[in-house]
Length: 207
Image 1 (spheres, rainbow, N blue to C red):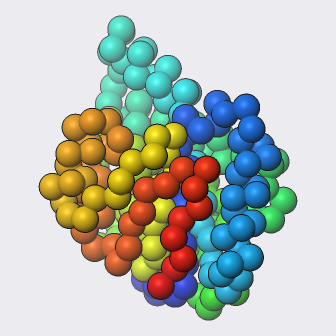
Image 2 (image 1 turned 90 degrees about the vertical axis):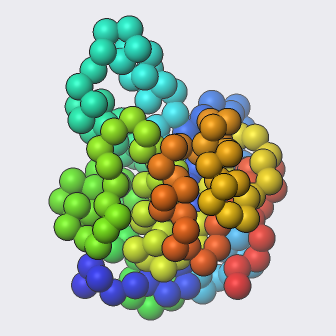
């Protein structure tokens, strides 16, 4: 079951910094509904970044020093917590920690994935490259890994409107600017389609 790819799936990663927007509770559902209306048969898998909670962890690490593995799993726990919080804004989305998070046939479902269980229990046993356990892996690389395993297209929803790179060098450049994490270029290469966008600009139509 784990190894079967899910067709017609759109993996959407919502940057945690967007949770600070005053209008996010209204803007996010409308943004998703616009995509679902345009492509009603496409499954959606949503992943929420850690946002300010993870930034607090980074400050703690810079000040007192944290065990890298402990910090990594604490950050993953914050992603799960943010998914639970965001679920209250998205009546169209089903909150889940199951893998795979969408059915094996396209049916227009929307799943909000808490990735902690998958990352602990499933991902380490799947084909390489597996995700390293360190600070250089954030929700961007996690979303890329999940999209690859689901044969999905990937959209990263960011705070800043940034042009989508066309190759690994471009992604590494964005990593140096802090737009994506340092490991993202290692996981994005196998994806058929990746796009950067914002909540003010919906992603392009799927293939």
